[in-house]
Image (tube, rainbow, N blue to C red; front, side, top):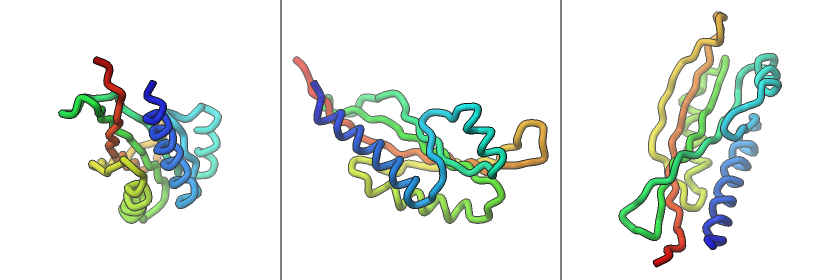
Length: 134
């Protein structure tokens, strides 16, 4: 059941990962990074992406669901955060069924240090067709 939808979802996820890795050559993590991965970033500079999906929501069409996709861009010691944000939007928007919704920019302080990291959380939305059983 829903095999076509599952293939689409997988293709979208794969497209996001591949596009981010190819165009930005930064690590991409799903949901969160492991402690050892975070330690590696601390040494090299905290620059990476984290990809997450939200819960499903209904739409006006009973045969479709909506889901948010969150891509968080972490950037340490880079002056081009806004420019890179535009590039991220440009790279991910062509993925079939994925549309840009919004972004939120924050400046985070690393635990008990004088280090700061910029985080941009980009929200994309995808509409997922489902098989409807009566």
